[in-house]
Image (cartoon, rainbow, N blue to C red; front, top):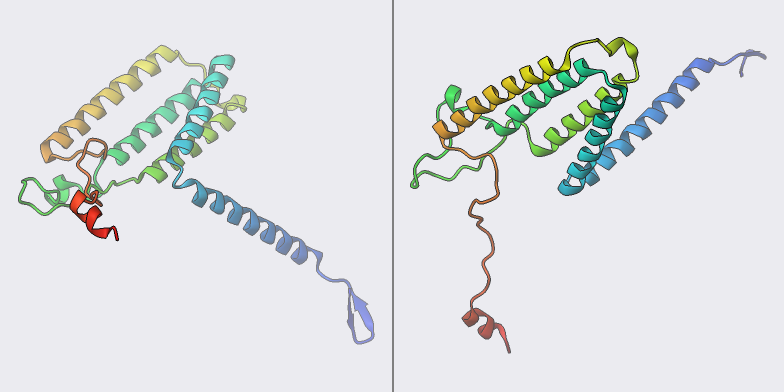
Length: 197
């Protein structure tokens, strides 16, 4: 209530409610972003979390014996994310070869089109959304699931074959394991003995 010219006028309650809601959503989004920032270096823990929620989703679909269309759409989305994860940011087929092809070429690290964290985050969101959709019977379209599975496998194999041929043609490997690492080398025995007083 506010006083105007000796009288009182009722205040606008909707503006205080909307500002409280906006403060609450802002605080919630900050906490969520803080959680994501803290989880960024925890690669193994993030992927274990993803495996757990994917297992929960699989058990849910198995128990209800339905929602195969949702699972099929999730599988197609996973293929799309996987292709982006395995592809270089600059496609050598379109922009010309930018990765070194000879030993004398300048070293350029492999930069993914979809970084690992965004890959994990997109997969996790997709599985969570698919899980929520399994609680709505409108999405449980009756289909013969072996046909969907067969079609998804054909699509996955042909897509991966094309991606592997692209990797071989332009000589890039999107993984870091097995590659030579350059960093601090251990000090030699001469350096260690010289540093002692």
